[in-house]
Length: 162
Length: 108
Image (tube, rainbow over all chains, first blue to last red; front, side, top):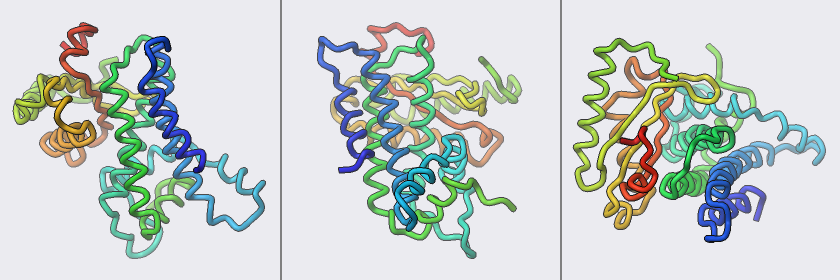
């Protein structure tokens, strides 16, 4: 099991804290961890085809930027993204769902990590977790699709310009 | 932060349409509140706060429940195909019993 799957499992545990554990801190870490689970899933998928050294692959992983990944995913979610091949590949609904989850989880993660005035309820945390789990399942279904491959490229270098 | 590029009439119409979406789910949704703001990156955003019935939370898988409400809001409010398309929609869900306990004014 890779780091992405481990993080998703950890997010599930944190979403259900024991009565003796700090609830709000656990909820916040659950949401943040669920986001990073999806983040690492996509980054790992993107760099796994790199044939260079492991060191170079780690360097490549560090080039992925949250902001760029959000912008690309937002475009995919609202069907305005264009792939790199011509004609642009048809985007399966599963990929749109992955992109949607990425945008929503990133927004929730920022709130969870930075907005200390906010109180999280269990249902909200479980809903974010359900989004993350759904994204993992959807990704598994379309990870070899041409659109998924081009999405991963876009996550690294951004949306295609006119 | 109540940042918006929409007129008072547009905001009123939008609120009405949000209410209409909530009414489509009488067994699942108590009410939906929303606010226009900016997210942590500074992008225009709409934050939807969906108050669920406890019965729906108990009987419907959460992912399925939230999905159909989100899809209805995006579709019925034309969030990706209208003047609202510059806003990123964010959705948060809680149950009525959770809100009764927390009494968060933003959810009332």
